[in-house]
Amino acid sequence: MSDIRFDDRVVIVTGAGNGLGRSYAREFGKRGGKVVVNDLGGSAFGDGADQKAADVVVDEIKAAGGEAVANYDNVLDGDKIVQTAMDTWGKVDVVINNAGILRDKTFHKMTEADWDIIYDVHVKGAFKVTHAAWPYMRDHNYGRVVFTTSAAGIYGNFGQTNYSMAKLGQLGMAQTLALEGRIKNVLVNTIAPIAGSRLTETVMPKELVDALQPEYVMPLVIKLCDEESQETGGLFEVGAGWIGKLRWERTKGKGFSLADGFNAEDVAEAWDEITDFTDAEHPANIGESNRTLIRNLKTAQADD
Image (cartoon, rainbow, N blue to C red):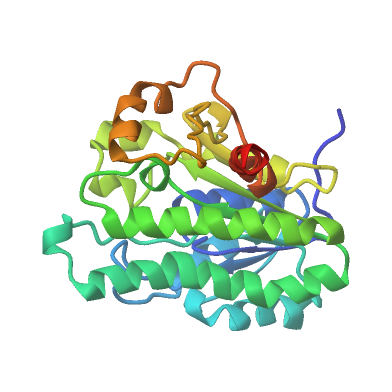
């Protein structure tokens, strides 16, 4: 198997000053990529700014023989981040939406400001960066985009209503972009990583944070961005040296007669059948999801 290389590819990594982003940026640089190291330099909670975070990573990439440029813009100014790539190298090939913060509180204590800042960084920020890069990738008939969700978005997590909302929002955005981008060779995937970082150190014991190295997540991101990759629309959980792909699962369900009508009591009586995952289905798109519903409708129409 040949080495995965990014020679002459321009890569944007947001939130690249620490943790996962730093690991990605350094590896892309090591493999020949020209890297825009974006980091506002704020705290894990979205406060402040410091250019040092991005500068340090740029210096590390250059010291290893790679090419990199720092960008200190907020992801809400995604057009400026992309413009850095265009001004420096004239194109953008890869976007890694990694930037993130936390404002963990139980829902009854959460303020609107806590909700808004998480939405802005995780959802609107990822939109702004990707939306600015999208036309360039389409025009060149090439692109790789990685979004970052979380187990909190997939499964929910106590005290993280805002974060869970934002992380699942990124997944929804990625799934549609995968459909729209495929025809232009712009492939889009989503990862749900677990790794030691400034974010996870607020919710995990130190020994676990230290053990969950970002380098255990990085190889998947590199593989998904390989120009030989055909994977798009995928969702992957990754961490601690383990990688798995997720998909939706749905019960066979229960089709009720529309001619005879049905009520809440009928639903209650059929509840075990409705919720039984034996021989579950795995719809992969809206068409497959709707097929069973439409079949039940057509059956009712034929019975009329």
